[in-house]
Length: 123
Length: 123
Length: 137
Length: 137
Ligand SMILES: Nc1ncnc2c1ncn2[C@@H]1O[C@H](COP(=O)(O)OP(=O)(O)O)[C@@H](O)[C@H]1O
Ligand SMILES: Nc1ncnc2c1ncn2[C@@H]1O[C@H](COP(=O)(O)OP(=O)(O)O)[C@@H](O)[C@H]1O
Image 1 (spheres, each protein chain N blue to C red):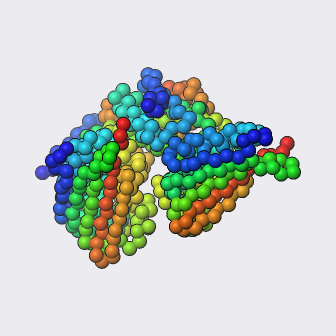
Image 2 (cartoon, protein in one colour):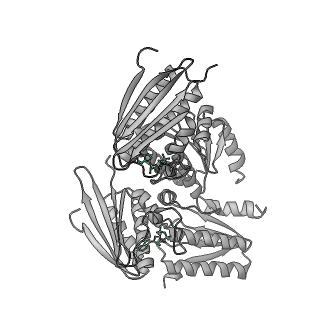
């Protein structure tokens, strides 16, 4: 099963999700469900979405990422989108994509730093 | 090569880019690639775009500046646009340009100050 | 660069969008496009393939390499026998969508590629051809 | 102020936009426009020259100095044999663009200059004339 390959790890009160390089539409939707359920069950406060292995971000994937971040916000959490490749950032901008107001970080390490610095202070 | 003339300097975890007065389409594409790749490789957290030598900011150049700032945001960085000439600022406003949500500073010195004050605190 | 200079992918279901991305990535990489240009081309292909699947149900993507006197390029065509597009100007507006989409697929793909041509007949189908040339250094 | 009171620049490719800016800057500076006015004039010229290149492929920019009883001014004309503009009112709206632009070139240039006149025939081409007078102190 493709969706098995998407790892969702809980680190204290943070959920770390590593996106696979070329997820299909279905596994993206399954992932979204899984994230929201896990957040609810374990009272997770934040989500780090590691997209560093993503080579193509089209408007479908972008919409799901933004939607997920928004749902997490509705549930009282924060999302950091981490590790976007330079070529993906350039392409996404030209395509016209924005990530709504989601927080971004260069990589997972820095995202974790942001989380522990700021989420605790309720930023 | 025109693109060689665009200098990209790393100062601690900040990238300082001096825009040439009259960049063409191609050198801008090269510049954007270079900025984002340097960000990734050296874990740069912010970009200072020095536009003090720019004497004319038309809507093409403005779009490039805003787009570059957006790309940097997608990768988890912050952009400060520094040193806009007063005459350019007046003209840009009349033309109808806005710099999106990008931060601005009077000059590179003040931009560096903003960066060290705020980026460290994760603003 | 003499073998495999053209090919096609039949689009029948969602997972074929991934096949399109894979084939186009291989072809563009073989043509020595920069990583950023490969990403641009694959992203446009993904948008257009998804449109074929979403709006027409099925169709075919063909790709081929292009040669000019001083550079090379890639051409992708997406052909379907779906409902067609009524207003070609309208669908090129950022944000216009008849589904729950972001409405960036068509206008965004035009921005990512060097050239885009749409032919569409209502009730008959749609063909979209996009091209990208490699920069010469 | 007797020599060099008119001139022209042929616009064939992107780098000619830079030549337009340079010539217009020189002319406006010679006429003793303030730095801000020079910037306004050069910026408008840059927008209009880019439009000629983008939408018509090529054309020509002519400039000449103007004299009235109590002041001087500059007139720039941009002439092309491109596709023309269908709806002159529409293109003057902030944000309207048929390309990937910001749609500020035409309305913005009108704001930067004192006067702007567009003549355009679909299929024949477009001529845009802008003027700016020096403030008398
Ligand atoms: N192959 C196609 N056949 C029929 N209609 C299409 C096709 N591709 C696009 N369209 C129409 O154009 C609109 C805009 O498409 P697009 O810019 O890709 O945005 P989105 O797919 O997010 O709606 C679609 O909502 C649809 O109505
Ligand atoms: N010289 C021209 N020939 C044909 N069409 C033009 C010309 N100049 C402008 N236009 C049309 O007017 C629109 C608005 O132009 P402008 O305000 O300069 O914005 P932008 O160039 O960013 O689109 C253009 O998108 C184009 O369709």
